[in-house]
Image 1 (cartoon, rainbow over the protein chains, first blue to last red):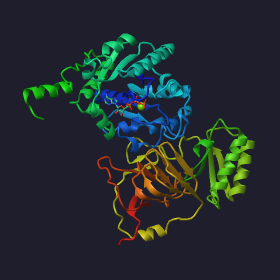
Image 2 (image 1 turned 30 degrees about the horizontal axis):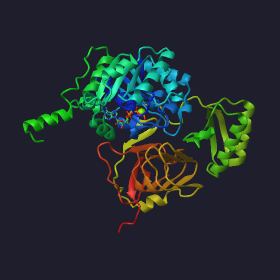
Image 3 (image 1 turned 45 degrees about the vertical axis):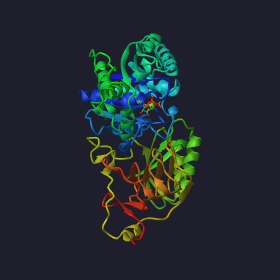
Image 4 (image 1 turned 180 degrees about the vertical axis):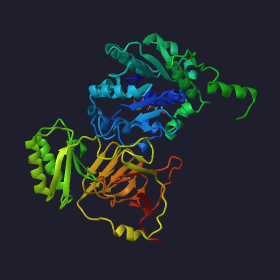
Length: 266
Length: 240
Ligand SMILES: Nc1ncnc2c1ncn2[C@@H]1O[C@H](COP(=O)(O)OP(=O)(O)OP(=O)(O)O)[C@@H](O)[C@H]1O
Ligand SMILES: [Mg+2]
């Protein structure tokens, strides 16, 4: 029986969809059978990040309303065997799915897949409830900003109330130069407030923007720091003990300064 | 249109009526009535095998609907039964992403020219029928569905969907998903001033642009049609 993991945040735009896509690819690269479920009905994005939009024929709402079989709505990834996407319906809204339907759907997926990752919509309303209702584990994504951390705190509380204990924290878009200047919360600051275990930290990386636009998850770029970060997260989900990424030294500003100091031209 | 509780889907064996189970019979009846009126003589003369799903119907209710349909469409209802299979389309496929998927035949969309005279192909097409006109941009998340033809006086953005029983004409950019001839009519066509759909379906044939190449904005209006079970795309302006 596979495991259902919800990727949630409370606040919008902090990196849930990016995380779902990259962690999914990371697990599939390690020969796991993975289903990615886009629960953001009406605002689907996960298909774009994976570059699969033009392959969608049926969607999650078609499945729960009985218009097609689950198997027929799953879109096979074009690069990785074992990776499938269950797209959200774009022309419907969150009320199109009920929690019971989501539980049934996830139970069906659980039988076929090692991991079912659910990309949760922003907010704490019905879309959130649908996304978390069937989950065994939760990953809460936040950025090191006061507002995002506040919302993450709220969501962790809601998850605990739903018996989803010990969610893991993913801190996204860390910028070391800013942390060093004291302009951004550090990992320790965030951890102190939220008091949950960290599953990973992902640096702010413009490669993510490029890869998102291209529909190729950044994890496939082994050289990028964000790609490495997502690889580590996939390994930790599989139970490996991997130390947190050392962001020092990779800092671009610092490298640039060093190069200038040594007189190296780019 | 799919939100009002009753959907008509035509298959090669007849018609499927999909009903929202939340609706009262009265509402179902009214919706079916409306659909039949808007379908005009779409079904006229045919002998129709009807299946339904989404909601149970009593014998009494079946009788009422049958009467309504015979009366409104001048068809004979050869059968009326609950559908057991999940899909209107053939679903017996072994592998995802093979050529035939979910009853759709799939191709990568290549804008190859079909050598025969395009006029002769188009002349054999059905070009009549009731038509819905829509003014404005169809945006992501919007669905326009109609049993007859659809004309969009504006653009269709990615994430938007247009479904027609007949032809689809977009007087603007077409960058969303379109399904012409959705009840199985492979004579249906799609035409647009700039044809760059995410996905284009006619009847049960589905195409999408190949992954490798992105189209630069084509400057010519184009038309998509089915020939030999394949979708072809051509400029529809006279060659100068
Ligand atoms: N580590 C990062 N570095 C740079 N940009 C990032 C990073 N993570 C995410 N982004 C960018 O932030 C934006 C939002 O990301 P994403 O769509 O994954 O967030 P989300 O939480 O799913 O949003 P929503 O709440 O709207 O569903 C995207 O444009 C993405 O490219
Ligand atoms: Mg998202």
